Length: 150
Length: 138
Image 1: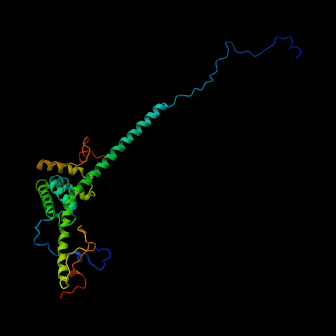
Image 2: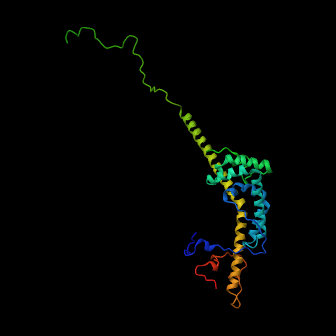
């Protein structure tokens, strides 16, 4: 990658290999690409709600990256645990859904078929349901409807 | 002319029983439904179209809501990861600054150029000096 104004730098020149300070507790990064994250996002959002809100409130206090490291570690650990659980119980359904998302421009509306089995499996295994906040309550949510166009 | 004067006058008279009546009013055949019915049909077609339009707009709005909330749920995770990386880079940059400026008296490494306490992210990317082109290890 060439950054604007820095044509004489190769992309590797921007990488800082210095490890994090030893005083910082180690945490695994999520290590997932966008499609599995998007597929699991509503479950991450519902299961890790408290950690996420705690972190965002902390970020609201200060934008300094060193201010919310502790809350950030909790957020990442919680998301990793959610992904691990889903992969343990519903690996096939999960994989079918995120690979569909990868193939369909990551539009959730175009992967309702795999999503249905995936949501059913997750509900059966953990009792987690997908709930979109703010959606009208007098009609079914968008992932429970029949799409107007296929 | 003279011999006809005595003859009884001959005059065109109506036929026996009189003329048949003349149809003088417009009698067009009845074509199609009435105006009110056409108005009603038109309204029905447009109403159905508007209903379908409402369904489409509703679906589009809900798909957008779903997409936005899937991103909102992931935002803390992504910010946390980026923050850790930024913190690591800042610590490394501070250490480099300390080594480079150790001979300058009165230099405070990592001191903000602003007087306020508000956090300001770095505007210029801090590239590790040992990786810059032309850097020689001595």
